[in-house]
Structure formats: C-alpha cells, structure tokens
Length: 634
Image 1 (cartoon, one colour):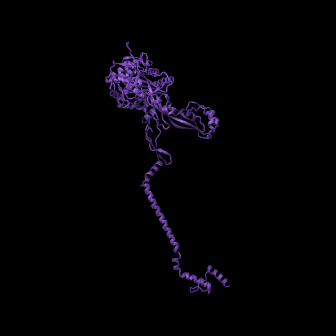
Image 2: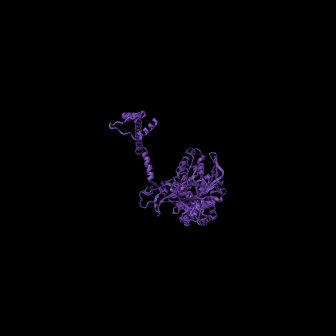
Image 3: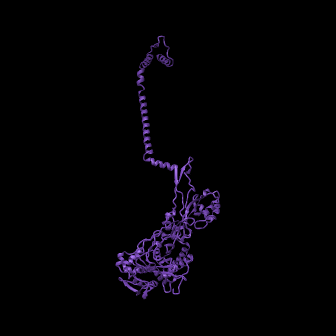
C-alpha cells in the first residue's frame, strides 16, 4: 500500500505539484520517501550557487582548449602562408613562377624559314627548299570500300622513285593495319593537290620541308647535302651553313580570353624573308661534260676513281670539280660514306711528273738555269746510293730544258735541280704553299706534306726525288692552283667555288672576300715555262692526245708510283694525271685530270690526257675562246 501510494505520489509530484498554502510553504506529506525527495530539492535549492560553479568546469575548460588550439592552427597557417608568399613573390621561386606564368600566357615561336637556294654561275638552281608531303591512310575511316579507294588513288599517286603503285599493291597495303599506314613520302605539292581533290575519307597528308637537288649527282661533290634536320653534312651545304641559313626574329603570341593564341603585333608584311641566293663559280654544263669524260675513262681502264678540275687562273674560281664515283644528294642515305668525301681536296698523293714544270719555274726564278740551258740526260744515275732512271729507259745526252719537259726526263730534272742549293730549293717549295692548307671554301681540305728542312737538306736523295714530283704529297686541287701560277703570270691565287650572295635581280649583295694574290714567279718565268709545256702536246711529246687543232695547248703528263702503307712504293699501283692550259697565247684556264689506279694503259698521256681534251673542247665552245694565232714556225 505504501509502495502504491509512493508510486502514485511520485507520479503526482512529477506531473502537478501540490498547491501552496497561504503561508507560502508547502504542506508536508509526512512520508519518508517524499520527505527525502523534498529534502533533495531543498538541498539542491540551497546549494544552487556552488553547483553552478563546479558542475560545468570540465566542459568549459575543454572548450577553451579547443578554441586556443583552433587559433594556434589559424595563426600557424597564416604564418606559413606568409612565409610561402614571401618565397614565391620575393625569394628564389619568384623568377620560376614568372616563367611559368609567361609560358602559360605568352608564347614565342621561331617560324620555319627555308634555307637560301644555291645556284651555279649562270643562276641555274643547284639546291632549294620545297614543300613535300607524306601520305598516310586510315582504313577504319574509309567510307568507300578499300578496293574503290585503291582504284582511285593508284593512278594519281607518284612515289619518290617516280613509279605509280598498282591498285592491288595498295589494297594489300591497306590490309596491314586499321590505321596509320604510310603509303609514300616526299610527295610533291602538285601530286598532293591531286590527292586532296579526290575527296576521299581516310587519307592524311602531312606537310614537311625537303632540300631538293635538281642536278642530282652532277654537282654533288661541290654542293653536298643536308640531313633530315636541315643541317649541312658535306660540300657547300656544310662549309657555308652561316650563309645558307636565314636568321629570323621570333614571333610573340599571347593567350586571349577565349584561350586562343593571338600575335602581339603584326609587322608590315608579317615575316620579311630576303630573296638572296648563294651563287657558285661552277658551270653545270661544263661539269656534265667533265663527268661524262671521266666516267668513260674510269670505266675503260677499270680505275679505282678519278677527278676533274677546271680553274680560272685569273682569280682561282673553280668552274668544274667532278669526282667519279659520286652520289645523288637527293638519296644520300643509299650510298657509302666514302662517296661523300671530295677526294680532290681531302686526299693527298704524289703528283709525279705533273710537278716538273713548277720545279723548272723555281730553277728559272732562282737563276740556277736559263730557258736555253742544257743538261746531260744519262738515262740512269745514282743519287745517295739510290738508282734514278727515266720511265722510258732512254738516255738522250745533252738536252735543253724544253726537251726535259717534253720527254718528261727524270734524270734531266734531277740535273736541273742539282744546280740549286738544297736550302734554296726547299724555301722555294715553301713559298708555293707546300706543307700548308689552302684557304679554299670547301670543307675538309687536307694539308700538303713535305719533309722537314733538315731532312731535305741533309739527304741528297730528297731534292732528287722531289725534282720529278715524288717524296712529298699534295691534293689535285692544289696541283691546279700551282699550275695557275704559270697561266696568270706567276701569281698564287686562292681556289674557291663561292661567288657571293645575289638577289632575285642578279644583283650582288655580298662578295666572298679573297686574299690578295701573291706574286711568286715573274711573268717572264711563267711565260717561258708555258712555251716548254706547249711542246708536250706536239709531235713527239708525251701528251699528244690532248692536242686540239687550231689552239695552242700547254700540258704535262704524270705517271707516279703510289706510296704503300708499309713504306716505299707499290710495284703495281699507279696514279695517272694530266694538266692542260688553255691557251698558250692567251692563258686562262687550267684543267687537271687525275685517274687513280688504272688497270691498263697506265701512262697519264693515255688515260688522263683525253679527258682534258674533251673538257677543253667544251670550254672553248661555252666560253667562245677564239682560235690561236699560230705562226708558221710553231
């Protein structure tokens, strides 16, 4: 009953408190449990002050700690951001970020600028840049059947080797991959336009630039070639890179609000490109004649190689420089590296008897002999314990200087040069430029070699072998340079193939600077030797196969043993040559032909002289050289 009352009273207390009496005090219930409950409330009421101070203390402290921690984190973040901002704006990262921003908002490009063209002395194109295209097909994008595409494309497509594929070939090619099939490259702009006009889906033409050499192998040894990156690798393309490359300012672009790139400013005419071309001294017509004559001789005598050089003695201009074998610069990648070497100026050889006229000029200039002097040709002599003999084995006795040259007497030449002091002879050779490199504008020219002065002076055999063109080495181009001394009145000129830069109106813009010619021989000495060389192509001389009717031609044959790799000379390897001068009464052109290791007909007058004759006949026609005024006693 008590528990029920308690339970009931308990519910009453929670729901509706008892009414107050007038005295303002509650009426006591008299129940222990109720009294206990009442005391609890009164106790709580009396101690309400202390309860408000102690009960919430733990949550408040925790809130304060969290607040302090949050502020510390915020302050730490602000401090870190400040440091980072300082580093980015003022510190080392500043310049990096500026570059990053610039790269995103601005762009500079160097527009493609074609290399300057190369032309011959008449303005005919030898090298130029052109647009070419590579054709790719994507069969998965075809909207017509592959066979229909092949039928339409085959007649239009002209490949690099000047052939057209058959439809069946194209169809087979289309089946190799669903996309990205390379069909042909180096397609001309004209053919590319025809392909585009077919309006076929699945075809892709990619544009690129290519260096084109219209003369193909005719002028390869002079012009050279460029690699796929457009850098010269041989010839003029290599040595004159700075003249052939156009330098252009870069174009600046900024990113617009829509993200497109727009130029900062467009100058008048947008990109000004000069119309200059590099003009050479080469004559392509004469070059072709020289190559044909050289090819014929090399093939006929089964020779290893050959070269032909034509030089204008007045200033050293090289009109022709042809080698056999050679290469096609349009397809240089199909040839051996050996072909790219212009051996007319990179390889040394002993010139043999073609050097005899130069030695005669040295002896005349020094006063050791006179044009009418005579020497004794015994046919065979000993010098320093070494035997020296004439190539034909003959002994002519007392002969004049002209006959020494005419019959190419080795013994006679030794006797002439023995009249000079060895040190005088040596210094004369040095004045000619032996032992130095010529200043030619083609690359990789070799330095001629000769013995030291001590070796030359101390050993009697050295001046003796040098007398007939052995014991030292030069290049074919240097032989042409030295014979120009005799054709131009004794002046040493610099061989060169570059004329200068010309504009589209053939007006000279820049000229190749050349050193002033050095007077080495007197004009009298040069003329005296020329007359001796004229006897070589006359009846009884060693170079009659170079004679041209109506013209006074000077010449000199050369047939020299080749030095072997293990020392001494080869018993069966010869190098044959011939030097011709057109003409004796009006000397101007020097023509040199060198044929290396012919298998038969070994004399220079047989192998090389006909080449020189063919070239001089073409030169007479091209340059309209008038016939010589031949007197009855000539």
